Image (cartoon, rainbow, N blue to C red):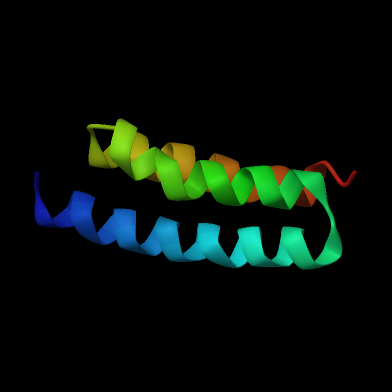
Length: 67
């Protein structure tokens, strides 16, 4: 495990927590699920570049899909 993977994981995990809290308070499914996915993805993605790509993709989903 490298330092960059750890730092990106903390960053995306905290953003995911924000999405999760927002989705729970607003009762919006898409930000809630993206928040959970952002908090879980640092545990399952082994590469820092892939983690950044997945994290940016998950952060963009609530912007494009508003349900």
